[in-house]
Amino acid sequence: MQFIRKSIASLAKFIISYTPNAWVESIKKNPKLVAAYSNNLHKSGLMYQLQTIEEQKASYLAYMKHQKAQLTALTEIDKSIRDETVLLVCIERYDSNELLITLDSIKNQHIPFITIVFWCRGDDEKNLLSFLLQHCKFNFIITSDLNKDARLSECKNKASFIIYSGDKLDCYLTFSLSHYINSKSDLAYFDTDTLNDEHEREYPDFKPDWNPDLQLTAGYINSGVWIKKLADFTDVCGPLSAFNVVKYLAFCYLKNMALTIQHVPLVMLSRPANLASFATAKTMLEPIYKEVANTFNKKGLPTLSLRWHLEYEPLVSIIIPTHNAIDLVRACIDSILSKSTYTNYEILLVDNNSDDSESIRYFNKLSEHPKITLLSYNKPFNYSAINNFAATQAKGEVLALVNNDIEVIDPDWLLNMVSHVTREDIGCVGAKLLYSDNRIQHAGVVMGYGGGAGHGHKYFPADHYGYMNRLIATQNYSAVTAACLLIKQKDFWAVGGLNEKSLAVAFNDVDLCLKVQQLGLRNLYCAEAVLYHHESVSRGYEDTPEKVQRFKNELNYLKSTWSDIILADPAYNPNLTLRRENFSIKPLD
Image 1 (cartoon, one colour):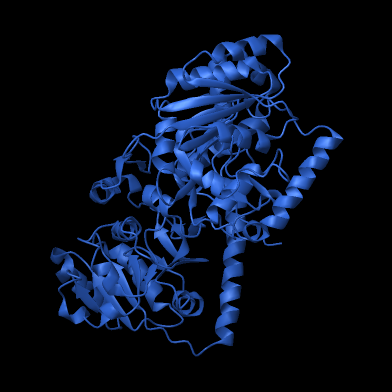
Image 2 (image 1 turned 135 degrees about the vertical axis):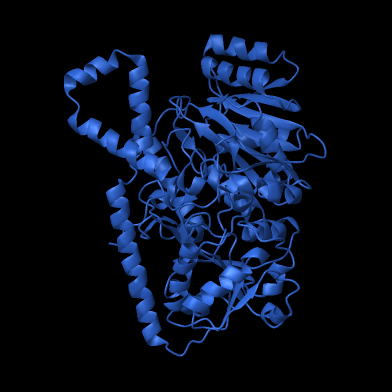
């Protein structure tokens, strides 16, 4: 995949730089060639300001130098640290070359591990022992049974750092374990990167803080995990597998185990490039997931999709505000009525001072449909006030805030979103929204972009996997857009609905999500709900002095009210840039 991305990027860059004008003009006459050309441009990243391969390498090299300097300085200050964490090396398949990489990194630790346990399969024990005796001068334990091996009785009560054979530890790992991990943490994890064929470090995974739904669907934490008590892991990990860490974390979340999980945003582990796709974990995880959800895997995708069980189908009140815009409303409502597989809904069409006779006649005709109610809001446009007004008329247990320029693509959009919003620990649920040209308009809101908030992966092509597969994986974000947002009605009113006083047009959805998050709920981007969003067609752009000033006022309200989460969004990573919406590495200047 990385090779393909590099090849496409290089090809697109070459085409842009060296294609003769006459040839470009000839391409324009062939629709298929235009489509292929545009698709390659999108995938290369040139259309949405992705870093080039060279820029990415340079920025990560700068990051690694910065991290090393930071840790070197800290070790000079405190030379007395001694760490007693047990290192557990899982050898899912015995490969002497992979193991040697791991062993060398263990030997290079500034603070040595005192206890090292190698967990392997029974038929690999003899070869492993011979190899370790040849290459290791430190003491170690080899076991094929974590639960019954009596030699591990003392280790099980100690903290443990769990890795896999082939992983390469940063030389400051043991120091970081002692220096950064909070004494109140039950579990901690670090950022990782990838070892290429030349054993060079590249493609860092700068992870978000604990993100349960991203873990369930993408397994973003899969090695390099610190656990306060090894016995907690051994009790549930099951047979040796490449996904033991993933299984343990899924088990902890689904069993509602109260764990304090810490994320340390330092790259302390490098993983091989040839790891098994997370999609292959479906067989192991499905027995755990089946109690709460059905598990799907779209062919070829490295992620899993979960549709959570519904005890019943709650009524959903779909609120659609509009001012005229007959064509948009027709496309929106026709697509909902004709394509949605989830049918227990009502539509509240809210007419805000429409003055186009054709639109008014059409709206009145729509009101004759048994699922549609026409409401009139005869005050100046205020998105928050309009939706709050409609919500007071809604009969549904679930509210769906939907813009009039939304158009259904995936028939299961509402079914998938309802399956999430009915979960007890989920607040607002947003969808994957595409521009008309099949680029990403919304796939989760990141706090801090532009000093306020923005859409992660904006302008990426619809079929792109995104950074760390985050475009195709359902996961938690601090906020989602109300262009298509579901929320339980009780949660909506628990936070007072949308802020119609200070946020009439912009950021009211972000504010709503953050208020809901304060209830102890998690907001969620549902990657399986895909719709078009013909953004700004209905209300226009911020192109007058009054609109510009209003936007500035609303942005200032967002900044002053939510400064803490703008400063450090837990769904993002402090090593990633806030200058662009493309998950590139933050400049260190």
